[in-house]
Length: 484
Ligand SMILES: [Zn+2]
Image 1 (cartoon, rainbow, N blue to C red):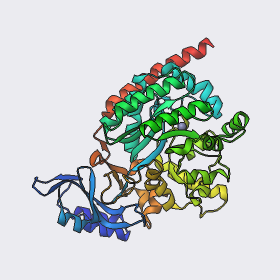
Image 2 (image 1 turned 90 degrees about the horizontal axis):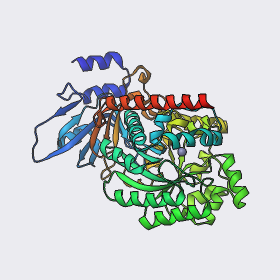
Image 3 (image 1 turned 120 degrees about the vertical axis):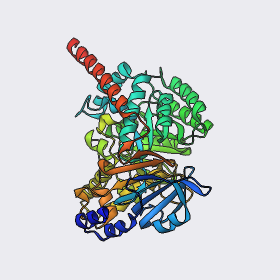
């Protein structure tokens, strides 16, 4: 009776009273194991509410999800699901909101190791005088392995199950993702300058092609793609050559697009056109494109993005921190553009917290338009889940809790003081919940975090390795500064 008592004394919200009923499972632990039988499935995940993020926004009170072989078999009331299925592992649903795993549509994961190395600078100053030189000096495969593991740890802890990465040594990134159980689109970076893993753009395309050949169809959670850096770091021929290579392998492209006034002006000076007009003129949008930022599209360019099904990834924290501007998300959504959310790298954020991105995305549109009704909570939650999945081309695979989709989902604990009272679950998820509330994470049907314990990464080792590497970077920076 202890649970029911605590429910009555701690929470007054009616749904939680109902959840106490759902909590009448015989277990006292979050995960219970039952003996195998012929009808067993892998996993049942219960929730006091299941926020499905399906087309009509169905929310099921006292619900459950049946999962086998990485696929969602059933989504329904806990009574129905448990009557029909018997699972090897069952996650208790008391005071747990179940929702799709979060999609981080734009990151540079290993930059967690450069978190805080240079702040409060303009984008081009920050890139050219700090980030690019630091990367050439310090970034190698070992840096990328440790930094990506650190990022995956942070992302899993916060409920992110899928990310789109753009960094160097993509084979190393893919290996980390394969090992830690996340889902990712991993870009081979193409940039017209010496980078940590390539001499120039041609070398980047060549090495990227090798990466794609090694990883395409190897693991269903991993999609190798190309990541041409931006319109201002590649010429028209190099951009077209990267698109040709992507078309050859049938893979999407991830790119920074229309991020800053500098980029727009630079494109005008070079081509007499803005970046989006330039890309349209060279046929760049003829293959699937995931475009990060898109802060400065004109009214004429927004319909092009919609028509070409460009997935726009909004990065509100990075756009605010580097003062890139406020993306016209409301106009893009109204025009039918696919919009997701991302963190960008941890050097320009400085964390990988998608809950913060959700809140800031909503607040930025409201204050920019002086309209509190601009992008409501449901719209923002969609951008972080089903909308984000559609923007990165995985809308049929993940992003909502529906039968037949891959089982990427999280349980969010609604037991902290900031969840009392709870009138509206979606409002609370967007405007209140944060990373620390994420209790359990399931990716492709596998539990990678159970009640805040990450099971797929040796976090102690990663913390030690990251601390040691950061100390080496700091010592070298100090030496360099003293020499200058
Ligand atoms: Zn970026």
